[in-house]
Length: 456
Image 1 (cartoon, rainbow, N blue to C red):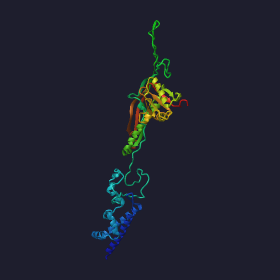
Image 2 (image 1 turned 60 degrees about the vertical axis):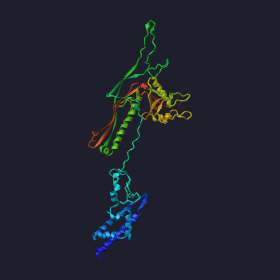
Image 3 (image 1 turned 90 degrees about the horizontal axis):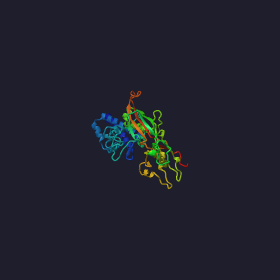
Image 4 (image 1 turned 180 degrees about the horizontal axis):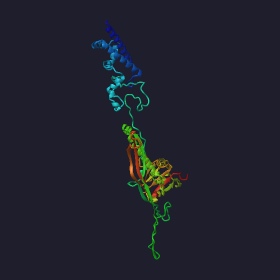
């Protein structure tokens, strides 16, 4: 026997040993939930043997013609190599094609490419095991040495892509104080108007309303007073010139241009949050603005509005509830000849009113609301908002006692002309609005103080 023939047999024996080792490794693979589970150690040993097999076959091919090698590989499979070949045939010809590592065959598989970079979902279209399909099983590789922890941008990554779920934005108030007002547009910077002070009700002789100035002198007049014609009385209406300057409400946020280009949803979130911030400020200014600096003069701080305390209510035979206090406050607005059109109060106070029960435990007003009815009390719509302090309510004729003016409606503007933003590739997102508030008839509004219950 020649030296080449002896070397070939030696290599063939080594090849059989390597193939037997890989069969043993393949037999040790576990199947869990229809998937083949491969440890990191098994993968490493399998890839090492496959690399050795590739090198041994190359040496054999250099010593023997391709025909001889083919003849050897097609001999009856009665050896350990034959057993491995049978296992290979069961998994569709592992030894009959180019030998690659498990990782290479995974990346080259049609199933992985069908994922389309993660855009077609996280599950593979068909089973896969080391580049070979197993009938009836979904196959996956689980390695104990896979990276763990947070995958930050720029960190070491593995194959596949990151799926980023949409941000969950915080809930927003759905009820707004602004909705109670009629709104007009204006092109002026200052709104000038006259505020008329009070008008006395003469509904019944001998009954006066001490909340207002006595300026309505209308009275029955006789045609003659003795020898002279009767003199008609003069009413002294009081008008006060006022101004409602247009105020600007605004805020902004900075963002990098690339971030907005990569995450277009983020731009929409920033826009919505900026606009929502303006709405929150607007409600607070309409109610609580003190008129100093660039603040609006809010309704609650307007001179001349009426007041009512819950503790002033009736105590017999049943003490007044908070709902009773709102009704008595509405009466004051009616007596000023303004029909109240709405109520603003804190959610905690509205909760107390909705949950008020009679002596038998029956809800007094909450039944219609609980069944989906419009939140109303005494026929007036309710705006429950944290913009007003707990323990305070505002009842009034929002439609006629005050006027809201829009100089510029809320809008979003984008610019990079701020500081050094241009060279930093950053932009400014600005939300801004301009408006004015004129409370022309303060007596049309009544602030209710839920200080303490009557008789407490």
